[in-house]
Length: 160
Image (cartoon, rainbow, N blue to C red; front, top):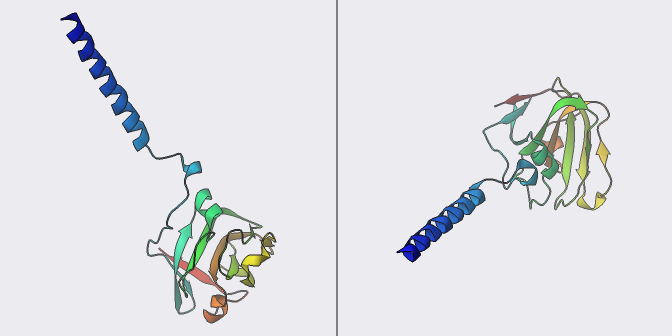
């Protein structure tokens, strides 16, 4: 009888340990270890004049670090909009990029303060900086800034 009792408690203990291990593995990894598999496409649209640009948002450190790195392409006429907490000189590079882009720096009033056109993936490790404090940065396919009518001093707005 004592042996049956010991086996019963051993089985119960193993079940508890296995369940605890299973529950631990179900927890998401801390944010600093996660890489976004997709960007948030939440219907956000950047407007310049009468044109609308669907944008994906990068407003967390993880999303901003990832940017478009490793991505095969970006749909023409759309972009990735980086949102920063405050305006400052922003630097961007082409690490792990697979296609050329336009980089558009935007100040806190949604005015374009700088554009770097047709930045090539092989420009890495060169860092491209804004000319002044930028609170937002828009990455587009190379040539899309001109096609969409975005130039220095263009006024933009974001509809969420």
